Length: 319
Image 1 (cartoon, rainbow, N blue to C red):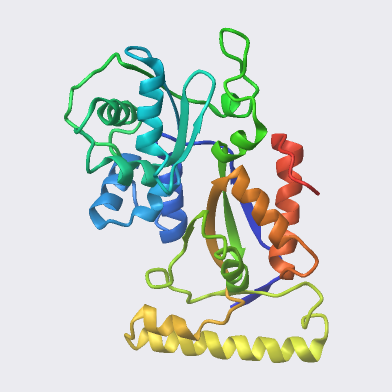
Image 2 (image 1 turned 90 degrees about the horizontal axis):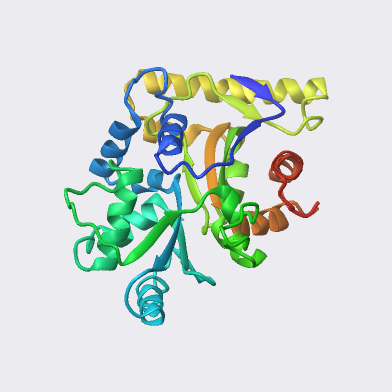
């Protein structure tokens, strides 16, 4: 048991369509990186087998579709009719086509049941299969020239890269914020931080589970200067935490289930969580959780994160 006063984070400013971030998030939450040599493909197959689809949310696919045959307007309406109703996909009609974005899980669950039903869905599913064959598995060799389909890069989404006619693919900042996406892993944050951030349910979350990962030598996060600068208070805190640690280890060694024994762990017990979302979601999170009334821990961490995102990655989150 040890008392700590700060935590860390790691930014993943990428879409990771091949699934590397799915693998990374799985390792963070299960603490298995040093114990397994499973490939990304094997990890994804295991996730699908166990139906733990939440991990599939840590890959992002902004898919641009343009009809190239038949009546252009009719085909645009056909695309919009199929995908505007999808709750977990973002869909916008642009000047030269339709942009649809979503996580690996959103695309997988949207398409898996009718991936062979019509030209449009088959075309998209087979396109995604070429990017991540483990997630979008298929033996379908269907190929159609009715649609031009492309995975947009982060540069194209962020208005930095122009098309051949020198016009940006997206010329509306509100649309960009619905389709640009990144993830952050927070290491050593308290239960308070996790409870606060889980309120933002439009985002994706994966956290280390103490049903599977033991806490035989846990850390406890407390605000610097609170309780620990007073020797008497610090001693009282240490005595309390030591008793919790010894009791936790005692019950664990007695063979009691981890998901029962974890009930002893205090709210300041540190854990790891991976969070992902669109710029629109992150903006709301920053606005809501960095105001003076928000919890001190999440406010401090998110202010630091926001500053780094603005300075290092050229985002424009309000300070």
